[in-house]
Length: 104
Length: 167
Image (cartoon, rainbow over all chains, first blue to last red; front, side, top):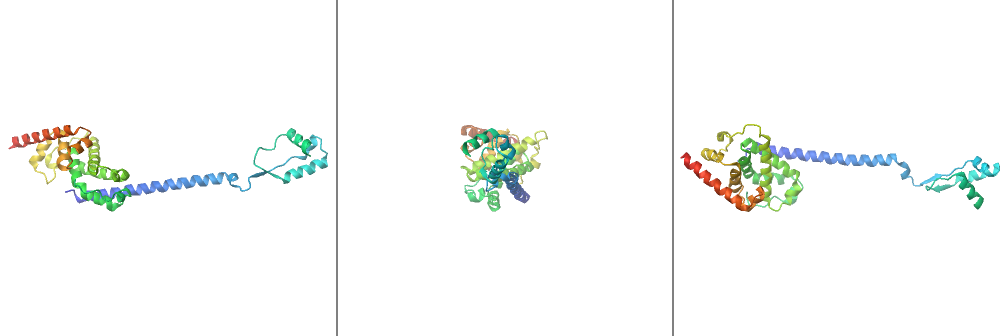
């Protein structure tokens, strides 16, 4: 017959393995939670409901292409108050000028 | 090993302590005998059985779905006994039957068993202690069933000669 100590030894050994597996599982859960929180904290822009950017243009850029100062100020204010979807950024002055010449 | 089915397979798969306690109570005697035949000493056999149950717990999913439970347990304890034996390769092998034997075995029989080659001693243990068929022994040892049968026959002949010569 096996000695009684062997049965106790086997039982204790299995308990140790079970405890080790439980610790490993908890560590994996904690790591997953940490990574998820880190992503959310470091990338807040992705979480904004209003994914838009303010559009601004300096009045002097409009003056440089032929606007008078008063019209440049008024147009700049109009641009600043509008919000556009986060797509391509405002391009160079030349494209702005062609839009102004064609639309306004 | 008995023909009783494994404890509830679901309980084993879940790693329940009562299921593994029942597994031990049913099979430890036979597993210890197989391990002793391979490892060579009672202490090493106990180490092998201890390691086997930890391995069984870690791979409890495979245990719960084993097709041939008896062969699965014997293969597991055999592998553990071989590992224990290999770890002691550099140490002098304890071949004193008085120290290694179980009180249940005759001293003369123990001495006769010690004269057998390891592979024959192993087949004897699997046939007589683990009560495996030759097909199951072949599956455990990765040898044809006929080879297992031959080793068993040679082992008995050697045993008879050793016991007959002692008298």
